[in-house]
Structure formats: C-alpha cells, structure tokens
Image (tube, rainbow, N blue to C red; front, side, top):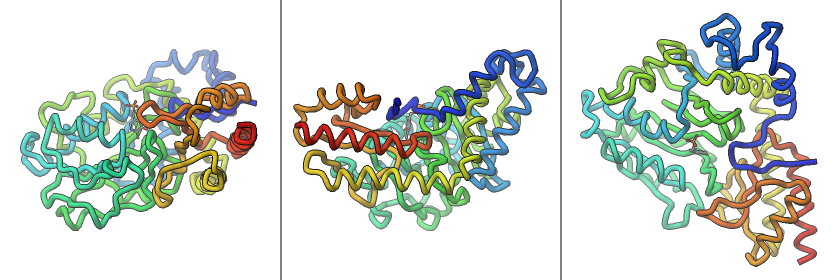
Length: 368
Ligand SMILES: *Cc1c(COP(=O)(O)O)cnc(C)c1O
C-alpha cells in the first residue's frame, strides 16, 4: 500500500483517478476525451456547470458570490488581487491604495511582496519573530482605517499554521472585505463564506490537478479593476463570461468536478472535517507523546492539513526518509525553508495512511 504525503500537487482519491482513466478515451459516449472537447460545446458546458453547482452546494456559497475558474495559481492571484480590488477606494488609483496583510508564514510573505509592487502594504500583524509558530491573536492586529481589503492566508502549507477562527475586520477598516488564500485547506472544513469577500486558491492541494485556480468573490467586489489589470484576469470579465472569456483549464475543471462528486459521496465537507480532525489528532497526539519527535507549532494554530515535525536528532533524517519510502510512505521531506519532515494529510489521505505513518514512526524511534 502506498500513501502519498506530498504537500502539492497532492494525493487524489483513487476512485476519481479510476473514473478519469475509464473515461479517458470516451467521455459518456461522446466519442471524445474531455481534453479534446470544445470548451463551448454542450458536453463541456455540462461539466463546468455541474462542477460550479457542486462547489456552491459543498461550501454553501451564497447567491451573491460568483465562482471563477481561472489559471495562474495562487501566486498569480497575489498580483491579481491588488489589481482587481485595491483601487476600490482610491478612484482607480492603485499606487495610492492601502491594503492590509497579516504575515503568518512563507505564503503570506510572498503575497505581501507581490502586493508591494502595486500599492501601499500595511503588515497589520506578523508572527515572523516567533518563527511563524502561531497565528497572531486578532487583538494584536493594527488595521488601516482606509484599507481596500485585509488579506490572510488561512492555512500556511509550509509552516503548518492554520486559522482556527475567522477574524472580524470590517469595523476597524470601514467595511474592508477579508481576502483569504485557502489553497491548502479549502473543502477540508466547514466555512461561512459570507464572512469573506474573496476566497482563492490553487487546486493542486485539496481539489485536483495543478493549472486550475478557484476564486470565490462577492458580487459587489467585481468591477473595481485598475487599468493595468490584464483583461483575461479581470474578475468582472471572467464572471460575466462564466469563466469562458478565454479557454479555461478544461481537463483540470473536469477532475475537480469528479472530486466534488467524491466529497458529496463522502457525506460532504462536514463529514470530511470530522475525519480530518480525527486524522490530525492522531498524529499530533503521537508527536506530543514522543521524546524522539518534535513539533513546534502552538497548539491553537496547528494545521489539520500540513503537519511539520522534526526528529530530535536530525542525523537520522536521511534514514527516516529512506525507510519511509521503503514502507510506501512517500514525500515526507519537509520544505527546504523549514527542514525536518512534513506530513500533508489532505482530504484524500485516508485514516489508514496516518495510522501507517505513526506505526512506522514508532518502529523507527524504537530502532534508533
Ligand atoms: C501552494 C500554495 C500557493 C502557491 O500556489 P501556486 O498554485 O503554485 O501559485 C500559495 N498559497 C498557498 C497557501 C499554497 O499552499
């Protein structure tokens, strides 16, 4: 049995891959692979419409939010967010606009750097001096009264830090919307979409193949793009064209649609959240009980999706990884900026995978 702990692109449900294989040459008797279909044809239109409707149902997305299927990943959105949203309160002038960011790790650091190219960035809070071991408590944030939006990364994939609360930001900012990078935990837990203005993420962690970017945006936040925003990345234009202004990543949307069906069959997001809680608890409980391994994230900010951990004696790292691969436990090496190990336990990782990892960790500890 193989268990793949990759942080992304990451494990997909076996049933989804099997169905995609079965339908590879001939989708539903159409005589075509999904890859070969016109994006404007009847067949693909039904695929994208069903995917959109299923995502809306799964996340209980209110009617006044639009779902956009885009490209470029979360990093492209890091530029497209200021371009689409920052000039909202400065009459289209991007360079005078102020935006607020909370720095909780590698990905928010990247978001901040990108936004700085376009507008004035206020870092409202940062846990950098604590080596990103926690989400800064909301009471410590210093928001701007004229912020066009407040940006957060609600799950830091590299650092292993996850928001376990939804920050209220509107009161101090005169109604600024909350913008959240949810790349690595979207669909892993129930969220109240109405608390956010924009939710975005690359698909390749918890949804499907790389190449698809999901943007969920409240309707009143469309139509504020600065003049420099590329037409194909202008959210209003993408929304007005139902994500078909230009050719969308059709095959990736098809696979995402199969994953949405799979989540529904599992009992929906609430059912997966319960499993994710159970999986994460199992692993953290073992790490906390062990003298051999160590995890450094504050308990209240621990990610249920990405669990970085360390061997107390780092001289054992190479042997740990080699033995893990032999046992069928793949891609456990930590990100180079953090070191150590990282187990990504997304929706598609079964409980048995976490149990197998812990069994291996116990055996390795007793042998060393
Ligand atoms: C992976 C990841 C990104 C980068 O996404 P790309 O699709 O590679 O642009 C950004 N933010 C978070 C939280 C991620 O996990």
